[in-house]
Image (cartoon, rainbow, N blue to C red; front, top):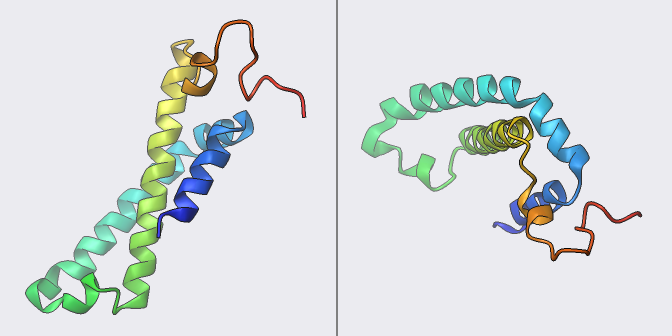
Length: 110
């Protein structure tokens, strides 16, 4: 279930272009995450205890909305975190933890 988020996380962490893209879309992602979360609460909230199908993935559209909201929150959080790191002059954890004298994974030529 978590294979694709793990692989996407590795892909994002391995290339600065992905970090830059996340920083560019952080505000639209936050707006979309808020809208999707409100839609989830409005849609699933009235179902209450009778919403067992909702929790078990019985409503495909609601499951898709949950997935979309989750990805938008992840993109937004990573985008704002990357923006704070760039503003503070900090390096990403991959480059900062590489041994001295050896280039980090991002510094190597393809």
